[in-house]
Length: 147
Image (cartoon, rainbow, N blue to C red; front, side, top):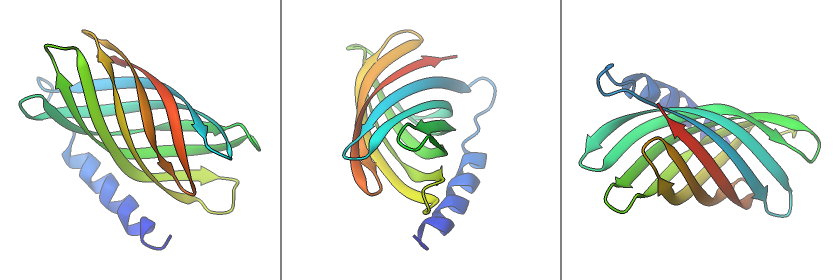
């Protein structure tokens, strides 16, 4: 867990450099519902900023608020996101990694890594996310809207 503290600082610093110029700016609002296997349901609301990297790839950061239903604990999801929008098919794939802050469970910093895929329309998206939130795997549904 001591390794996650420097990662949080690096994530926040990287987020400052990822803020795109106005012409490239893309903001994504998301809602998620996950099953944290053998633990609880997790609901989250996220706000993300992304910028084009090369071709269909974009890089960004997302952050937000979450509710863990078992124990009614709250937290803050923080992730770096690498996303590929395969425009002709309307399919996207993405990878996320970062520390999630979970309050009320004794261990505030939790490692998070996930892979997501789904359908991207002009602005709205729907998809699945499969990942790991320390100490168990997660699987969930994501809804998003890009401004």
